[in-house]
Image (cartoon, rainbow, N blue to C red; front, side, top):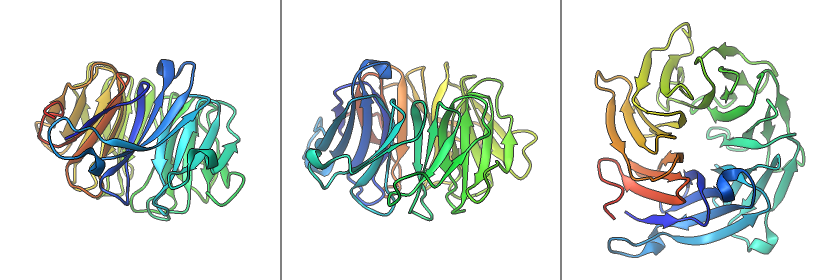
Length: 321
């Protein structure tokens, strides 16, 4: 499977929900501290046959500030959103030339926007998570946010929509909590003291709407049943440093993917006695972004501060290109 060298350290990668051969990647100069960002759409089909073939960038847009996350629209095949270090959220249309992008610019957050997620059920809205301690609900057709969610006491690093409930999402924060929200209520419906250190990422099980996984600076992943949140139902230990992101498989119940500042990507089955299924050591710097294709069972992607974007099927070596 192919690999791509981005023009800067990678922060996020997402498979398209419409085209099995397309990915979205966000990269930032100088590890996101200063400098420009890059939003890139990659086409795997254009890579051509044979080992070592690299995906082709079919859309590349430089931004004046760092990009920390990105997300595809669930309703428009060429529309995508990017989370910026200047506190803005930018919408891009990859079917339009760079001169006509971004197609919309939202400036409401007071600090860096660190996380984005598009609603996969309702498909007409997305959520942003910011270091200003808030989350905001957006519609691409509205000039301003629909609602702001307050309650976290420190930076909000990530948000994730439920795969089953159109109005429910969860958030991960440096205040060591994960919170569950309903967009119809400005206050969280659940405050989960998930870890003893900052919570960097979280995701919902795609098969059980009550199961939530959280990832932390404490190097662990914890799996929770939000109906009975007094203690995690599973704890996954195996990373050597902070766990940057966690994703549930859209195809296999109980399977998770994680990445860490220990430069590895791990696959897990939290229901198994030996939960660690695979460990990948293909990156040479912090791994910051991961995803699993919703269209191709077992197709994985990762990106890291080495600037590499890897795409490979589960069970194979990402470096065996």
